[in-house]
Picture 1 (cartoon, one colour):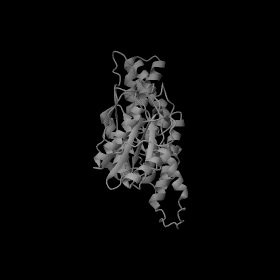
Picture 2 (cartoon, rainbow, N blue to C red; picture 1 turned 180 degrees about the vertical axis):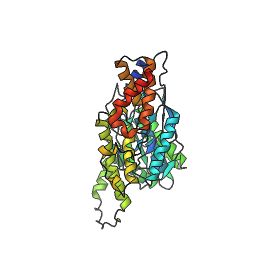
Picture 3 (cartoon, rainbow, N blue to C red; picture 1 turned 45 degrees about the horizontal axis):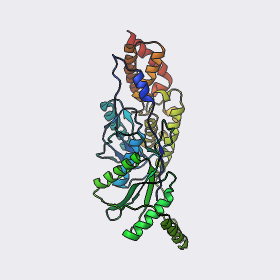
Picture 4 (cartoon, one colour; picture 1 turned 90 degrees about the vertical axis):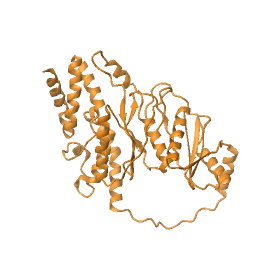
Length: 388
């Protein structure tokens, strides 16, 4: 049984900055393009369409969670990492499509199978923005109570079983729900596979269930809405039956030793959180880098060079390596924020400021390996160019 508990996230304050910087001569970015992909540490890697995610008032956590739930329903995709899915966003469709192609090429070079799937996120424009997040983040604003529970089964003979979302208390035990749902399915449908349950605010729970079922339908699975609800007496009986069973015999380990490629993949996967942490803590990189994309680029580079010195090159020197293909590392939105803040503090006019945003973004994308040591120089050159 897989239990996935996530917290609740509302919206970011970034939109306030965008509105603050709006003027009669500057068009505020009203929406952003996004795509999603599954954990690059595993193969195949699933990629969604590029789609309009709406404004920056919405965080990408709800999107990546729905994409991950879709993959669960369609492929029973699971990962032993906290990185289930990732959804980077960009300011233009052209930019998003280009970065998606570049990243897919990197993964193919690392020996990954790429699967393109027809999945698009539809923003919820009528309700509050909440989610059960995969990564704990500080919440902003009032939270809706996580009081709706739902459960799914694995696929058995082309059929999945579901219940909920059902209104519950906010202190429900997902372990108890899973035990009860498993016993119910075993008794009524002779189901012997795995089940898992989750809890969240009603709008979030409904969207996650919908995403899971959308994936199941895409795989032509039969969906059985059981209408089951938790009964504490059933769980107590199930626990007693489990305690009465004889312990399973200990069997010798017959698993084949890991291949060289599997070992390389495991080592490269270890660097993903380290690379992201390095980027987020670096005073220069965190200003203009998409640290998530950077961490994935490190992984792809490690796999592409797992038989040579590239597999062991320190992250601190890798970021300055001209041979390190860091497409997607420059975050044009963060560049825009940083330049606008600095240019406003320096008293630059709107025309110069927006020109500098465009010029610096172009320079950084052409020279990602020089960002670490030349960001200040590149900024001043961009301002000087725009003042001519």
